[in-house]
Every structure is written in C-alpha cells, then in structure tokens.
Image (cartoon, rainbow, N blue to C red):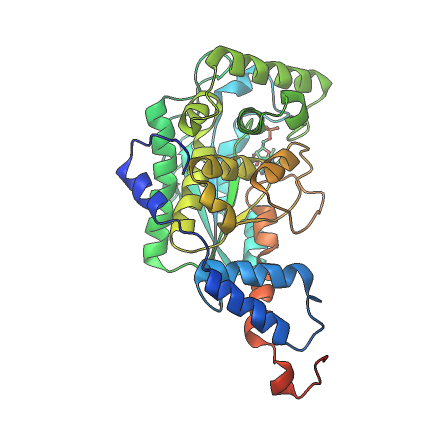
Length: 357
Ligand SMILES: O=C(O)c1ccc[n+]([C@@H]2O[C@H](COP(=O)([O-])O)[C@@H](O)[C@H]2O)c1
Ligand SMILES: Cc1cc2nc[nH]c2cc1C
C-alpha cells in the first residue's frame, strides 16, 4: 500500500483483504492450458484471462452470477458549460435504468448480469424501490470555485461503494463484477483526476465527453486547469484528489472495485469515468491492478493514460463512449468463455489427440 492515511475501519479492513494473486493456481491453469487440445498459446488473450481469473479465485474458475453496478452522481462544475447535455439527464437516465430501457439494461440482459443502480448524489430526488440510495448530496460543489466535496465525504463515497457491494454480495454471491457510471459533466472531474494521478497534461486527457462543441471544450480545459490550480490536490493522497476534483459516483465505483477484489472477484472496468475510478482505487491500493480487466478502449482519448498508468490492456475497441457499464457488460461473455475453455476443454490425453514432441 502507498503512504495513504485512511480514516476508515471499513476501508482498511477491505484493503487488508486484497491479496496478491494465487501463483500456484495460476501455474496450474497455465499447465492445464498447455495440455488442452490446441497449439500452445493459440487462444491468446482468452488463455491469459483464464490464468488471471484462476489466480484471483485460487483455482479453476467458474462464473455464474454477474452484476453491474451503475453509480450515478451530479456535478457542480456543469454550471461552467462543460457538457453537451443538461444536468437533469442524470436523474432521467437513472429512471430509465430502473425501468429497464437503457443500453446497459439491454446489454446486461444479454450477459445475464444483475443490474444494480446506485444514487451516489443525484440532484433530482428519485423514488424507486430498486434504487439503492447512498446519496451524499444533490451533486458536488463546483470544483472551479471550491473543493468538489469535503474529505469526509470523499471517504464516505468510497465507503458507500464498499457497503453497496457487500450488501448485494451477502444477498447472492457474485463471481464477476462490472463498474459503470452515470453523471452529466463527469468526464470533467475524471480528466482532472487522471491528470493529477498520471501527471499527464490536462489537454492530453480531456476530450469531448457527450459531444461538447469547441466552445464547451475550451471551457472544459479551462475549468479543469482552474480547479487544479484553485484546490491544489496532492497526487500522493488519493482522498485529497477525490475530494478536491472528483465526484461521488467516482468514489463509489472505486469502493465497489476494492470491495470486490477483497472477495477475490474480478472487476471489469468500463470506459473513461470508471477508468478514473479504477485509477483512484489503484492509487489507494496498487494490488487491485491484478483484479482489474479493462473492457474497451473508450473514444475519450484520455482513457489510454489511465490504462497505461495502471498497466492494463483493453479487450476490445468498439468506438464506444457511453458509460453506464455498457462496455464492461459487453465483454462478460468473453470472460466467461475464457473460463469455460480452461475448465471444459479436453486435454490431448483425454481426447486422444497427438501432442507435439
Ligand atoms: O464511459 C465513457 O468512456 C464515457 C465517455 C464520455 C461520456 N460518457 C458518459 O457521458 C456522461 C458524461 O459526459 P459529459 O460530456 O457530460 O462530461 C456520463 O453520463 C458518462 O457516463 C462516458
Ligand atoms: C442520453 C444520455 C445517456 C447516457 N448514459 C450515460 N451517459 C449518458 C449521457 C446522455 C446524454
């Protein structure tokens, strides 16, 4: 762990349970892959994934229950004109998730994954029996003028993600987790976080989000630079960065990821915003890297800085930039296939196929 002072027993307990991968299980999986009826290495990334997941789970992996956690929050910085869409879309899309009408619902249904929708701090008040209410307030503060949230709330955001995960996990064991986001304006704090943690110039990690025009794009760059200058986040202190230039749903997703890793569950990262959350989790506890699977290469150009910094390579590049967890649930069947190949294929000996000398 880095030199992070964490003011939370819940979080410290989770962090202490994120262990290195099981090397013996990985070696067994590697040996088994090499004994299966195919030229060695011919299933490429599928083989690597199966070995990683064997290491996470400590044995031959089987994946049955899957869940996508879509964490939503609003952002004070939208008043600077940094998004192409109005703020009320956050709450409206959350209702859409709850009513089953959004892209993430359709893709989660294809993947047979449970969809968990969490209010981490939406501006609108939403009532729905399926909505998990972890609201930390009606959106963050405008980070251009003041810290996005207090340090206390930053810790609470991550704790809330942990609590949501643990509650769902206690209801029904989960084998594979995806993190996704919803929040108009949230590419702005994501770029700020990524710039701080990776040391990359703001321009190089800032793109068009939902599709801002040139004027909005320039405002976005200025706002991020100003927010970093005004608040002076300390990159060595992940909670300082989250509190000054982050978002509630970003902290929440980091909490889900850390809690899942502590239960030996692989975590699929979606796009740019969930990437920023994965980066935050990595800054809190670098060991989480081995539990992460990058689903796709978001169109948002700064995503590459996140993946490079953590050391992840995406599985697919589908020109997507939606969020919600869509890219992550899309690759669930690929991950499941990787595990099935390892467990269900026959060996050369069993199938009576001649191996090379
Ligand atoms: O996941 C991505 O790569 C991604 C890239 C661009 C935009 N989004 C989604 O669009 C919203 C944020 O965009 P913006 O322009 O309002 O900052 C938010 O709801 C995200 O889920 C998502
Ligand atoms: C309609 C819409 C749906 C979204 N899903 C995730 N971010 C989004 C942003 C908008 C604008």
